[in-house]
Image (cartoon, rainbow over all chains, first blue to last red; front, top):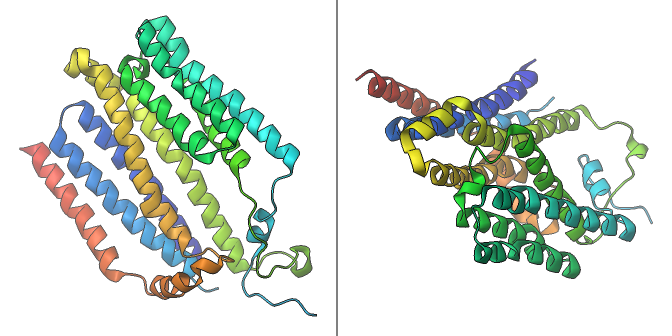
Length: 62
Length: 270
C-alpha cells in the first residue's frame, strides 16, 4: 500500500505544480508581478517535493 | 561459453538498443520533412500572408527555416534538424510577434500546428538516431518471463512521468494562448503590446519548461539508467545518494511552499 501511496503522491505533486505555474502566468497577464513570482516559487517548491517523493518511490523495496 | 550475467531488469534497454532499419529511417526522414514544412506553413507562412505581418524582406528571412530543414534532412544532421530548424522558427516568431498572437490561431489551428511540431521532433529524432554500440550483456525478455514487481512499479512511474512531460507544455500553451481570462487581461492591460508580451511569455514558458525538464524529470531518471558503461562510476555515487532521501530538501520544500503561500495571502489581503 505504501508503494502506491508514494507513486500517487509523487505524480499528484508534480502534476499539481502545473496549477501554480499556470496561475503564475495568469498573474503576469494581470501585471501582478509580485504575486506571479510568489506563485512561481510555490510551484517550484511543490515540484521539488514531488521529485524527492518520486525518487523515494523508485528506490522502495518490495 | 556462458554469457555474462546481469542483475536487474534490462528489458527496455535491450529493446531500445536495436538500430532502426534503413527503410524505417528513410520513412522517418520523409515524415520529418513533411511535418516540418507543415509546421512552417501553419506557424509562419500562412499567418504571415493572412495577417500581413511580414514584409517581403522578412518573409525572405523566415525562409531560412525550411532551408535549414532541407539541409538537415539532406545531411542527416541532428544539429540542423533538432536545434537549427526549431530555433529558426522561434527567430521568425520573434521577428513578427503578431504571428504568435492569439487572434492568429484559433484552438483547432493551434492544436494542428502543435501536433505537427511534436510529430516533426519525434520523426527527426528517429531519423537522426545513431547506431549504439552493442550492450555489454543482455538477455532475451521471454527467457525470464514477465518483469519483476519492482520493475513493473518503476515502469508505471516512468509512464506517469512521461505523461506529465506532455501535460506541462500543453498547460503552458493553453494558459498563454487560449485561456479566455488571461487573453482578456492581456488585451485590456497591455493594449498594443499584448502580442509582444504573448511572444515573450511563450519564450519564458519554453525556458521554464526546459529547465524543469532537466531539473525534475531527467534528474529522477538519471539515477536509474543501466547498461551505460560511462555512467557506471557516477551511478554508484548517485545510487548511494538516492537511497538516502534528503529530509532537508523535503522539509525546505514544504516549508518554502507554506511560507510563500502565506506571503501571497498577505500580499493579496493588503
